[in-house]
Every structure is written in structure tokens, then in C-alpha cells.
Image (spheres, one colour):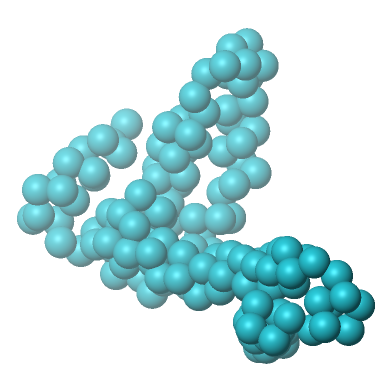
Length: 150
């Protein structure tokens, strides 16, 4: 499906370039040039947004240490799990941790919930992946494991 959308937006991009260079609307309907420029720019802009979101941003997120289970995250550094297993285990606690944070959200609607849900995920993740720990001598992992201790 991604290939379909990639080809679709590539065609939109090429169509936008065509509108910007050839100006078919102006020639066929004797309309102002700004219509061709507007349509062409819109098509090029939509394509650039899609290609950025589909191909460039995932590469940035893959190395972002704040994204759980990314290549530089504490979960990837401190545990010996492959990325898909790590992500599946992490996501399996979404409902449980949201439910755990619900009383805080209801009593303080403006409270920041992410640190609470992150800690919940991390503790439950560590219970599951405890025997897959690695790099226990590194300062970052030692501090991470110390914060997870009850």
C-alpha cells in the first residue's frame, strides 16, 4: 500500500511541476497565470509533505532516544531484544498504563501524564524483559535500572 501512495504522490509532484512549467489551464481556458501557479504549487507542496512524513521522519524517529525501543533508547541499549519484540511488549501495556493514570487525569486535568505512563511502561517492561538485561555496567543503564527498582 505504501508503494501505491508513493507512486500516487510522485504523480502529483510531477503534475505540479507540469502545471508550473507548461501552464495548461492558462493556455486552454485563457485564465490568469496565477491559477496554474496555485494548482502546481499546491500539488508540489502536498507531495513534499507526504514524502517528508512517509520517508524522512521515520528515519529521524528511529534514532530518537526519547522514542521507546528506538535504536538509541534505553530499552534498546539496556535490553537484548530486537526492535519489533521491544515495540510489541511496550505497546502491550498501553491500556493498563492509561488506566493507571486515569485517576490523576480526572483529579488534575492539566497534569502531565506522559512521565507517569512512561514509568508504568518501563516498570512493566522490565518485569517482562528482566532476564534480557545487558550493559548493566554502563552508567545510563545502571541509573535506569535504579529508577525502576521499587
